[in-house]
Image (cartoon, rainbow, N blue to C red; front, side, top):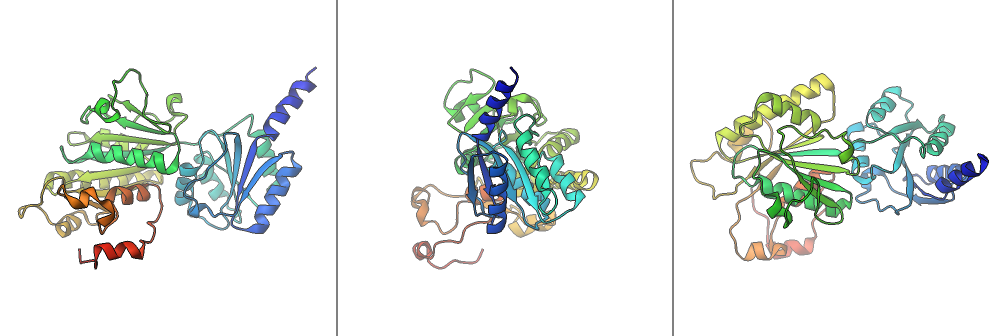
Length: 368
């Protein structure tokens, strides 16, 4: 009697779609052949390298993804890329040319299997077949947008970032408004908050968070999301709260203005992030953003002064813009909108080359 359920279970998972991603034709063919021999009938092969995939469109019946990383060993970039393109409920593993145990352990800590292609082919297929029973949970990408000065547009930029990530990646995304923020989530999503998590559109939900620290991303409540974007004001946050947020975030965005007060807070964040990197050796990115939400006056710090005080360059600059023709016609602007540059930087993507035809509308590019 037990044989029939077992056959039904095997048929169920072998009919699921498996994806193989490799820029190498021979590796692609070899992996597909191994999966066919194991009984998987629906296999899609894509000749792509992990760093070149902007959006991985999977079918609703996707079961697993095998990604060939060749001889790459930049683990932080690979982990970020996988988190950004593979849904958390889809089994995923990496294969490559390195037999480093340390490399495999690093990926394992982030819920990713790694197999040495030359010697662990059988282990790979066995893991793929067992994945239907036991899946290693991958963490979501936790992004904290930290307002280092009141009234500098932190909520608007955070909300735009969450929308753009959900549109670009088409992955489940959750926007979280922290307790120290503006508390206007109902106005942002355009409806009354009636439950803990409120749907905004197909890929974006939103919630209000009353505690100061970043939520526990391991909670079952957040299992469906690939991206968690938390907006929080840290003007009055103490050192312990800042450290908790930094420890739980994959990427931190410090949004400042030209005041010394916000510069001091950013310096403090930089020290905390550096300390965590030294002690835990955990991948942690800090993006510095300067937002001129008001017209710049002579008594404000210059961009050069700010970068000198911080000891590193500003990553993204949001200039003050008057309402008028340029804001109404974005295609006439010379520069890419800073929110787009920020989105690409968070996702670990390089900015595409500008179309030479569009440059003709803007004329010659002047000095910054």
